Length: 281
Image (cartoon, rainbow, N blue to C red):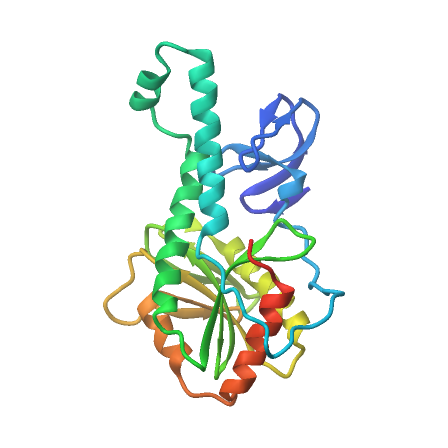
């Protein structure tokens, strides 16, 4: 069964290793094959599976609670360091005399460096967001979705509503490709350079559903894909696809600081509620 244009759920013909958690996957194990990277991952990391809105059955926060905003990129940074240390330990155990030399002359796996790249993107955007903090712009970083392996990179609670922000450190120019229309169903695809990244939009929409499930329909919730080092044009460039904004940090910041219907006390209350329901990862 296909999970998307670049993914296929299948039984492995040969043994493999999950690119996310590095678990051993024996032959004939059900797994997901990623055509673009030619890697596999176990079904625990099936991003096509729906994420149920979190319902937290614990007492709500009180007005006097101190909110811990979290650390941008903390969980991705921990995962990178864990994988890096695991590889170093494995190489030194296998080559006691030459281990340090081998490590100095060899590169980390792409599946490991991807966590470092992701962490740096979240850290950079998080630092920029923190500079906006005020009574009507309150931030949360690296929040864990209960009963899920997924997390939310950043949440900004503002006078204009809640922004669920996914940080991406990708090369290339983000743009929208629209297919179909008159005789075929309209289909919007998010491309970064020539790479099809439409599944990023799906991921943000799932996160928006989680936050909306916590807040109800009274508070506007916006989804954002923020590309921190993409090749944006000098004029224009930002766009919306399926209600998800795609833009860069300096284009995002003014939207977060804009006036809106929520007063400072309402922003603070929503901030406390989300921090309570979505703990730091």
